[in-house]
Image (tube, rainbow, N blue to C red; front, side, top):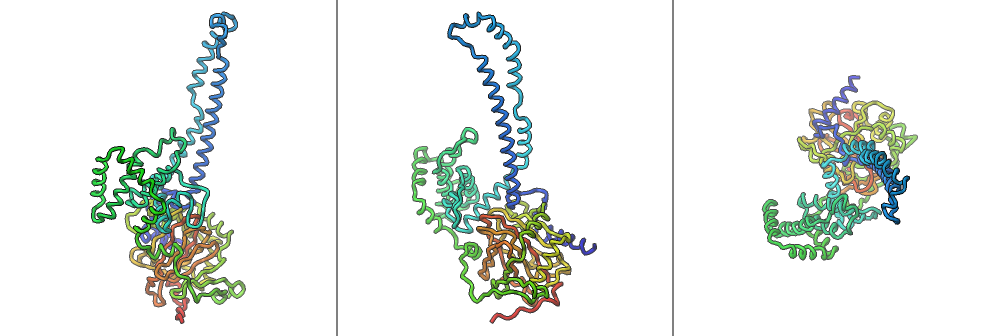
Length: 521
């Protein structure tokens, strides 16, 4: 029991101090995981059901009103005086005005679909926040920049080598353009404004407003001017540039503005994108890895591992060499579909985690890469996974049996970092007797059709998630000193739901177990 409490205490310290996780655990940011997006999908489904019920109630009321109008229509072919001289019609007129119309007034004023409206109001209390919107837009920007995608392809649902049957509508494109304008990415903002302005008019403008108003054309002009200043007068600070552009804008007539905007809209799309690419900075090693441009590896092999534990003599594990020095390997088919579903059932409530940059005061949703959950309780699932890790590594996991489950959001990544103690992420005094993080293991618990690779930029290795496989690498040299080549990151998820189960192996329990690495010949 004391050991169990010690582990929980350790995890709390790791959460709150070491990784600088968001302190507001109760706030769920939907954009931070695909699981959160699934909840939003359910919310919209409920909204549609209630709106349908409300529309049905309105339709029923409309039909009742129409029936009343039809029954009260006056036949006037023979003159109104002759028409009302009929005693049946005279009595009917007086009775209707005395009895029916007051009831009709009450019926007309009565609320329609009250229950549905109340439910919709309740559901709208849990819709995404502005922070969720910002994080989602930032995710699209990450996808664009990391994979060097043409905005015109993105808008049409072409993501690298995949074509989808969905596209961004005009309002989506404007939201992306405005976001890029606000963060100072004027080159791509220019293209997104052009895409929006060249779209066909959308329906429901009476309800949602006209998206392509004069302000959009003005923003296109200002974006182009700011981009020109960014290139020609790089030393000018952003505030001065905006002031200068606003001064220029004030001198323009509406005719001059229309002429300028029309000229921008008539530019060749491909030529404009080529100009955009020429202004992009040189791709970082992380970007190169995410794009799949690392050189092919040679002198690597696959084999069966049957020597780590006696059990493997009966059921050896498939091992694929990824890199010799530092040691990085992939184990195939080491977590099964049934276990993955069990893992998810054990993680119904996940918390904000994986903060970008590791700054002490970060609490924004845009700093969150995933939703995470620690599996601490000793369950059959946890016992099986730890035994499997022992079979893979030969290490003793009794002192720290817990594992971490994570689910990433669309466009979310995890910036380059080390898993070993390095001052900012994990402090030595907080890990106590466990010691440093000797090795890391990631169980890929889902396929990711596009994006989401684990990249080691310094050794030019990129590993694409494959459901059922597990990636193992060492963070330390044999003498226990940090190996900086273990620097790694997670590429933005483009398509798919990236589920992982992660385990960190510490030095102290393995002091008399780990063998020294064989020298590379």
